[in-house]
Image 1 (cartoon, rainbow, N blue to C red):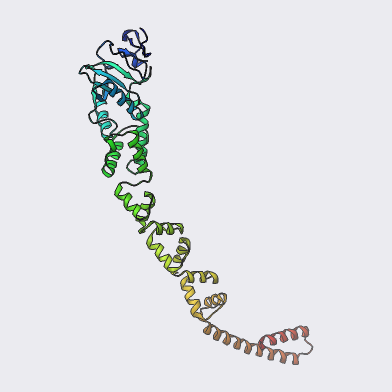
Image 2: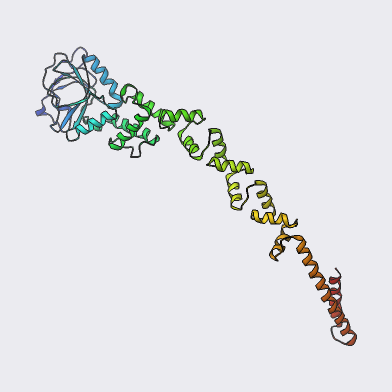
Length: 384
């Protein structure tokens, strides 16, 4: 074969002398360097599939070779390498590789549901396809569409976006299935079909941008933005907590509150944080001032604080001592103490009198000095 003036190489390959299993592209009746066109006068032969257990995935067609090649090149970011093949009807088909025949129809249906390929894409055995006009596959590269890197990355990005929107809960593995389709259907029900009715690099980037803030639909996003929210997580947390706006939600969140009701009660009571509010609540306090006063006095509950304030005591230690003895107020405690002191004084006077009488009758008693000292001390105590 000769090189054309444009440097293209056209070769007629014989399947009988090439290893088709090692290199699927070797089964093509015509070969050209990737990214180039074949000569216009190339031999026309039927372009059957490289193996009997696969079908060509024809994603589109155009009336001219140039239009078909331009379209094929535009598919590269999402579908990966493609072929442009001239058909016997004069149109040029854009082929995105092959699909295994046992799963070809369900995979074709799923790819259409996900808007990865056009709705008029179809499967072909290649009987009506004659000449490879252009291709971007590399020699030795797999023709299996489901293995193409660009396609797998496309599905993974879609799954990741659906996950952020809480539509998808499966693995981000690039494998299409019911969960991926269901999540995408939820997306289109809320946001509409991607621009251009096909997942392109642009439309996927738009989906990812929208999924970045996590809103499930435009209505939710618009309502959230009208309340000052910029992300779905904060918006939903605020709505669950009953907050009317982003500013109040953020203020409450900074203090540890998750519900508007609790935050309002805390603000009304003058509490500085949710921790302080909860500790006060556990002790029965509704007012931050009362709670802090109780802490200052070492009082543990609202009931105890009320009793302390009503008792007339100013010293919480004296109050607790009186309470332990069964007294509810300072007045009754003081009266009891006065009676106790009076009784003690009377008892001491009797003892002193007895001691003095004993000493007079027994002046020679040993330890007389010690007894006298004790009597004097007891007398001094009684006098006070």
